[in-house]
Amino acid sequence: MPTPLKEPSEKVSKRKDKDNKKITRFKDKEVSDSWTAFDKTLQEGLVNARDVLVAGSQQRYAWICEKEGCLTVRSCRTGSVLQKITKQHVFPWSLAEGPQKMYVWVGYSDGRIILFSSSPPYQECKILECGPNMGGCNCLLSHLHFVFAGYGNCQAVKWNGATLEREGYFVGHTGGRGSAIRCMDMHLTTLFTSADDMCIRKWDVNTYQQLVAFKGHEAS
Image 1 (cartoon, rainbow, N blue to C red):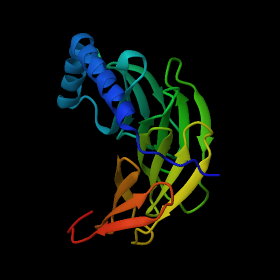
Image 2: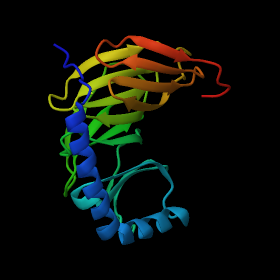
Image 3: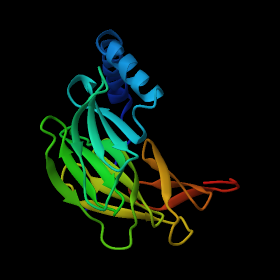
């Protein structure tokens, strides 16, 4: 039975907002120097990244899908490489931190999603596969108890972050082979996806039904 996604109550939203403010103050006080150093590393061209995720204890570690084809974990304070992970014939394309913060989800060019432990020694823990002809995993989005993945066949998939089971597909983007979902975002219980068919689509995440198609864009 697919797990429904509920809109947060007003009481919960206020509590989360309060917590987020505390986290923001902590970041400004404790991690600002780290961010400054890491931003400088990116700006100086020392890191050529396809995707970047800051995760781990006190958000001091940056996971990077390097354009040279490897996955690295770097120190936010210095930009130095703490660990380098390579896979033969496949490349890391997308990143998300799992709902329980235990895993970093990494989407690869062959469509697999590999879960790594979010703390040292960053071990490979689980491999999730959707089957053949899905294309690469271009983007990942973590929201509440779920992780959403956008693939190279213009489909999106909803994964349960607790059971690591596939719950359903969002099918509606067109374009054939070579077209892909490029980015996603969430608002309450609706998912927005953008793809190479030059269309943004809005979905109900519980029924997987398309609600609106925003057309008229001139590029993906």
